[in-house]
Each structure stands twice: as structure tokens, then as C-alpha cells.
Image 1 (cartoon, rainbow, N blue to C red):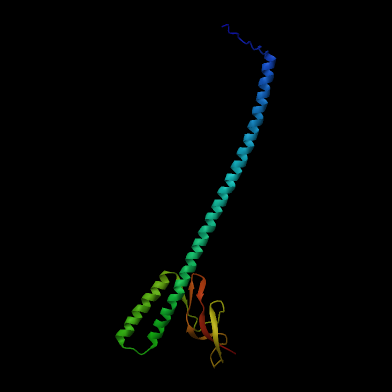
Image 2 (cartoon, rainbow, N blue to C red; image 1 turned 60 degrees about the vertical axis):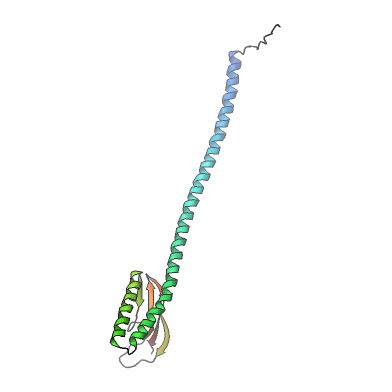
Length: 174
């Protein structure tokens, strides 16, 4: 069989340049579209990374606050034990019992101090509503200054600068 060769007409240089020019324009357009898409993806990625960093910071703060609040809750429950130790030390007991109670109370106080808890014992100081709760007001006697704390019913406590229990006090009136 005779195979016929199909001859394609040869393109002239001008046609080739025109064709390549069109192809070049299409590639430039595609390149520009890809650059825009890359820019959008990069912006999206940067926003997502920033959001994630913000989330980590918020989550860290939340975790720290939850830990602090949990610590305060436990300490508040333990303060009652210290109150009872103080009451027991005011009772008339034998020397060995008192010595044991003093040792226990000292360990209790050291444990609170190691956690950053400090007592509020305002006896003789000017009444401060930021750390104290006045439960009673008594008339002023000779030599006393009005507005000072005459008696502490219940010691208060702070954890750092945060009051976790207000001192319950008797205040000298006018």
C-alpha cells in the first residue's frame, strides 16, 4: 500500500512569533493568577498561624487561672484546720499535747507559707475594708483610737496579693 504522507504547511517565522507571543501572554496570565493564589494562601496561612498563637496564649492563661483557682479552693478548705489548731492551743491541755499542737501548727504555717499564703492579722491596726470584714463595732474606751481593730475573731489570708479570706474583726467606734 502506498502510504501518503500528509504534509503540514510550514509556518512562517512571523506566524511562529505570533503563536509564541500568544502562548507567552497566556503563560504570563497564568503566572499572575498563580501569584495571586499563592499570596492568598500565604495570607491565610499567616492568619491561621497568628490565630493559633493567640489560642495557645489564651489556653495557657486559662490553664494557669484554673490552677490558681483550684489551689485557692484547696487552701480555703485547709484554713479551717488551722483555725481549729489555734482554738485547741487556747484550751487548757497538758504540756505534751500543747507541744504536739504547736509542732503541728508550725508545720501547717510553713506549708501555707511555702505555697505563698500569708496571714492577715490586723490587731491594733487601722481598719482596712480591702483585707478585713468588720463583724462588730465596740465603743471607744480611754486610750483607744477610733477606727482601729480591737480584736480578731478569724485571721484572714492572702495568696500573693489576692485576699482568699478576709479577717473578721471587731472595730473601735467613736
